[in-house]
Each structure stands twice: as C-alpha cells, then as structure tokens.
Length: 138
Image 1 (cartoon, helix red, strand yellow):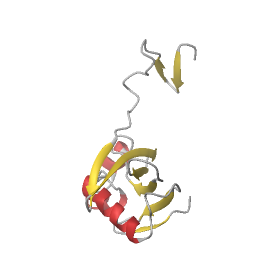
Image 2 (cartoon, one colour):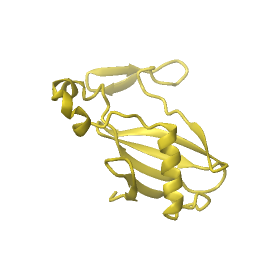
Image 3 (cartoon, helix red, strand yellow):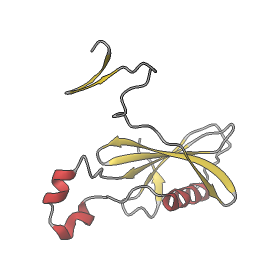
C-alpha cells in the first residue's frame, strides 16, 4: 500500500518522523541482575500461543533465546471466555513473563552451560509448567 503498511484490514500510515502508528508494538528492553551480573532482556510474540524471551549481557557475546507458552488474552479472548471456568488454567497459559521467571531462566541456562560471553546464540524452550528448560527443536 503506497504511503503506509497494509496489514489485512488495518492500514498503518507513515508518520513524518519515520515511525509507524502507535498501533505497532514497541520492543521494550529491560534490565535484570542475576547473581550480581547485569543482563538485558526482551519478550516478543512468536504466535498467538508463544513468546520468545531473549537475554544477553552488555558488550560482546551471544544471546539466550527461550521459547515459552503464553496465550495472549486479547488474541484468544473468545476461546478463553467460552472455556469451562475450571479448565482455563489447564488449557491456556495467561501468566505474563515476569522478572522472577527471567531470573530463573538465566540461572537454569547457566547451569545447562550457556556462556553469555560467547558469540553463539543458545536456543532453549521452557516446559509447559515453566519449571525447566530443555533444548529447543527450532
């Protein structure tokens, strides 16, 4: 679409400053200190049922990418409100990725051999119960 980006029925016009409309989500970089080491982290949507948590240290080195289940309540609103009340927690993962979970992810990844100072990107996935990391099939 000339003069903007077309996304189905939604058109996001170009802005004078070169940015897109505020409808486009911004990636927020957060800081966290785990065992006296400062890391940066972001969360990005992969699809309506998964997010990718990316963690890295400042300076040279690689990133840790962890896939985790998260059912966006806005994208899954219909199925969530029509699901039997007692089964929503069984079927949907509605808890957002919080700093405590990111700290747990970093500690487990380090225990599994992740070396933040090396250039390689390490890809893992969080188990459905969010208790353990395992190798990512992707």
